[in-house]
Length: 404
Ligand SMILES: [Mg+2]
Image (tube, rainbow, N blue to C red):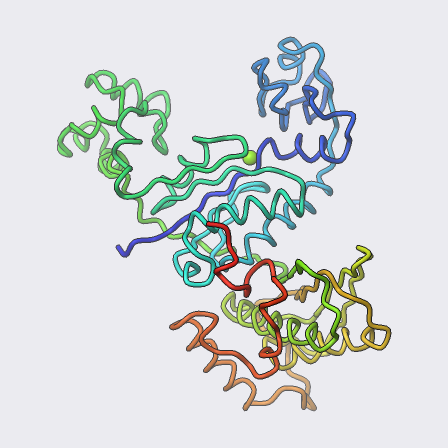
């Protein structure tokens, strides 16, 4: 198994944090999101409420007894899923290999991203910075060679922290842990192991594999591996991706329309190649522009036929921008997005003259080279105008600009 770099990103007290962010009067207070009726259940507890022992999935009646001053908030799933999308959009800037675990938690395989964005730790730091800066929320990140260890790590410095587990530190970190920290080890396995005198991972590791399999069957072999920090499960890319987008915020406003066009071209190349990587097609292309005064506009266009071609996506995005370029104002943020994704192209129109076999061949060649040598290996002529001197934030920016 080649060395991998996996991040586990977990938002801190997600629903409660969003409520506190959006309702300043809740900040610093014990907040419980969920129904407060007799059969209500806590969906999320703010850290102020956790001090009292409240936690998610707890009956609200018990939480209220533990913390009589807690403020119950009904919560809005619409808001949370909107914010969740924004979080995933940040993650997508660093790698297409995202596996969502829940609305506020995901694995990200950044093995192939380090040549663009620096070390896995740098990527984690950058993700945390962007989540804080753009969404005013905190997350915890675990950085490790596999999913099991990354998830374990994200919990070690929570909230608002990150932990790195390297091959060298695996055993030091795992050994003292109670076996209950291993995936799949519940109360009954714990009792079973206790009869063998095993409470810690180190004690587990000292058992011969034969003893473990005799006692626990296949799961015994799994535990043998987990106690050594071995986990080969791949990060499974979300098969249900509904949208793909790429945004840049500039340190200094861009005051030249051609530079903005160059960024749009680069973003179109990126979103189109991710679209093909996910084996999806799009019908709706949008651009987002934030001006220097923070006014933000989103404009979209719907094509007649589904496409996954860079040229078509780029022309549509450029046309959307050009309608605004006539009254150009300095731009602070620009983004290209694709929505209405489908798994297969619709019946191609008889007179589908936008699409050409030549374009498709160029895209295929581009993808092959990008997959082998990375995103920066190829640069389309129209993207060459983007000047790194402007201090881009986000993917495509100069890796040297990243914090280390
Ligand atoms: Mg969470």
